[in-house]
Length: 184
Image (tube, rainbow, N blue to C red; front, side, top):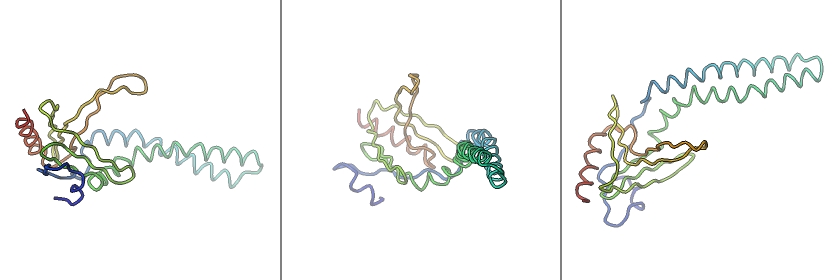
């Protein structure tokens, strides 16, 4: 058992399974779509940025220099958004397995995140816990919490939580089902 779970468990609770996400791109279609969508933003943002810098060095008047500076600054959000969309899925694929830890105990599921925004979320395992297994080619996902939430537009959407992209998805799913049977 990882020493980090010791102080987080309730008395009498024991760890049945612990793990991390499998590294790599798991939703390749989504990642490729985001990268292709972000590529024009990145390209145009970089082109405008360097064109603005080039025009800034050759500006004959102060107003031309101001316009070149504005163009350079105007390009930054587009380039930044493009870089986020193009490189974001790659960065997430590399860092998720390092920053996320999962544990299943006799009473609850624990999801611990470290990094820039550390958090610990605990989801109790009850007989009424909605459980879903999404098998994948290299890793499976076990969803054990779903909640309807309203977004900024007021539309309802489902937010899911669980053990995402784990190598032992079916095993963990069966462990949770067994825990649900004991709790009845």
